[in-house]
Length: 177
Image (cartoon, rainbow, N blue to C red):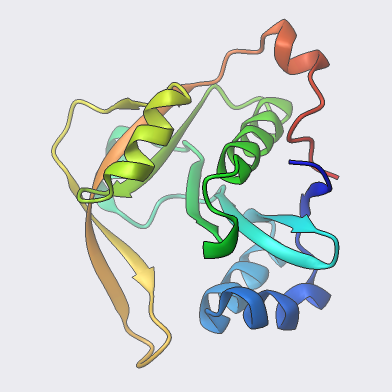
């Protein structure tokens, strides 16, 4: 994972992100939320090419069940790695960077949603210490490119306690610039 840099996205990155990863509506929405201090769009770069993104959702969840059972809990949202760079640990680095940021903000836990048929992603999250919550699957919403409507996915919710450990304080991997 040499030459991988993780940093907060800047509005000037929009065209490059869209060129490499598509999803103009998604990125425009997340930049607007970031500008309103409602979240942080983390990006992974190799040289001048974005190879992955993860949005750190800091506002109240859109889904009723999450607002009820996990009030004020930040959510890791829309982890995406460019197809040419999958399986190289970039997703892990983005998640680690997001968790580190949340610890610095004083957060005690974090949640995420994974589509129920996405076993590969679920295995990654489990390996990183996320656990299924004790409630049914949830209808989660995502933006679409085509018609402006939101897609609905059935997702399992996973939660992780964020404990500040010595390894987190001294390990530079995943540090956000």
